Length: 133
View 1 (spheres, helix red, strand yellow):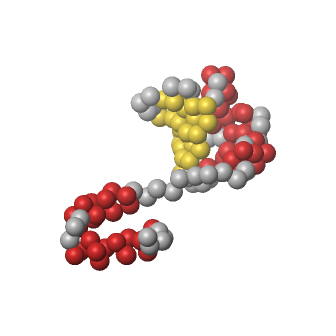
View 2: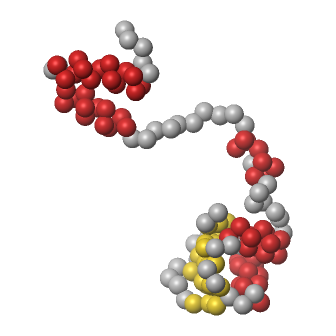
View 3: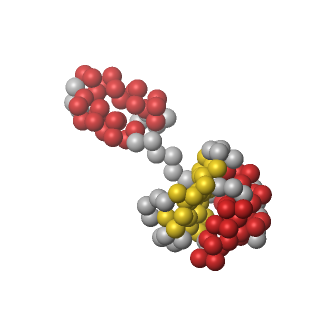
């Protein structure tokens, strides 16, 4: 895990600042933040809008599980997604669009009506797994 974002209350933000100070984080001003702190390769930013916390760097998961969730939020969520978000694990439809339609559309328009098109159609069908008509 490289980053973690979560909304928090003003009271939680104050508690987090005190915790980071206690843990030896170094504070520095950053635009749009209430505060920004770093220690080793871990950075914690609390943004004005929300407010919300963004944790980034090395050790994000450990910091969230052992410091942020128990001492600030009072609830363990990371690693318990199946308990807190059960609908996310139910069977569902999704979209897997990679943007290839624009390629195929241009290729078809370019080759339209030509010998190239007659050669292209079987190839396109093999990629799209469309049965011959």
